[in-house]
Every structure is written in structure tokens, then in C-alpha cells.
Length: 87
Image 1 (tube, rainbow, N blue to C red):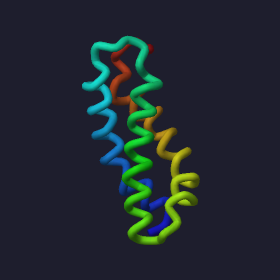
Image 2: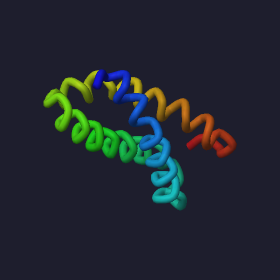
Image 3: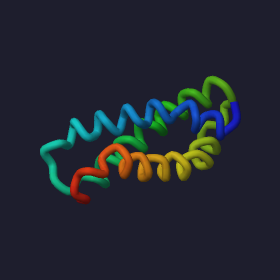
Image 4: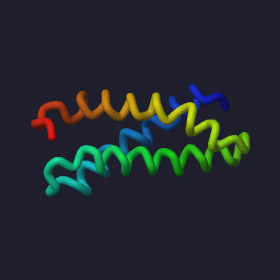
């Protein structure tokens, strides 16, 4: 499984984690950085597990996919939660 396939496979998980992060921090103003860190760390753990089973190259894979995942989180936040005031 190539890194682009891993990114695509991870997007539904990332989206669900974003919703969970929103729920977990709903009473905490200005928690955007914490929410993103939660989503990124959870995604890292999952992708490391996936790549460990398939390739053994989990560190290299995360280094490759973390930027596209991070950009997806930023874009999806704007789309999913854009009606809220920025934090």
C-alpha cells in the first residue's frame, strides 16, 4: 500500500476523529490546536499500525503522509465547522 492510498484510506477515520475532538472540547474555547493535535496523534497511531502490518516502514510513511493529513484536517475543519467563529 503506497502512501497516497494510506492517506485516502485514513480520511474517513480522520473525519470521525475531528467530530470526536469537537465533542471532547466543546466547552473549551480556543482549543483548535489541541483538537488538531488529538486528531493528528490518533491518525499517526492508526497509520503506524497499518503500515507496520503491511510494510514495516511506519516512520517513513508517517513522515510522508503527515503533511497531507494535516492539510486535510485544516480544510475539513473549514468545511465542517466553518459556521462557527474562529478560535
